[in-house]
Image (tube, rainbow, N blue to C red; front, side, top):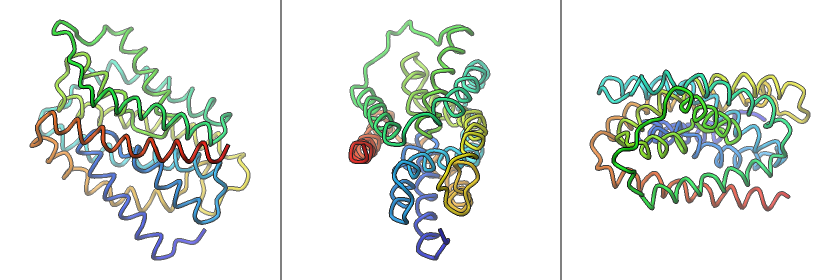
Length: 272
């Protein structure tokens, strides 16, 4: 698959959009990248099952770079809860490795797409309902946060996202302020991405039908273009995030997730 000018433009626009959303919502951009990379690869002859898997893996790889850029911007504003990051990270790494190295390689791409759509739709509904947590509820202890991190890392590995789709609702449910939850989610994107990318590369080395430029399940040309663009735009999203009211931020988050959930459900069901 050659990197012609039109493809570079498509990937650059995707990188700009996802970088902005990563800073704005702490979602790592994966929720937007996976459907669009799937579409781009499918339209260029990559088999649907493989296109979904490579989109998930490539999306996760870009989060390594986006997370660094986004979290620097949030940290300058003192919004990152590093105490939460330290407690969730060990579980996240464990869950990510199990998801990306084991379960991911065994599941068909169509099932991964359906799972992506259902889970993202659930996350969007939770955001729209905006249920208020009990005022006394707090983040669980070390063991509880390890378990929560394990679930976040595992699910992220299956859908190629930075974990914001579950970590942001989880933290707000535990009475962490939405802006701090978004910023902390951005910081958590780094260990999630690194652990999952290692798994995707190892599990994809023996895959058949990979296009040129593939490294395991990761499509390097897309990674280079998207990561470069998103790295420079993520701080702008973080800047805007601190100026928006909480309610509007949640509605933006949920609306985007609904659209992407619908596309991936259609993609998964149509390729069964």
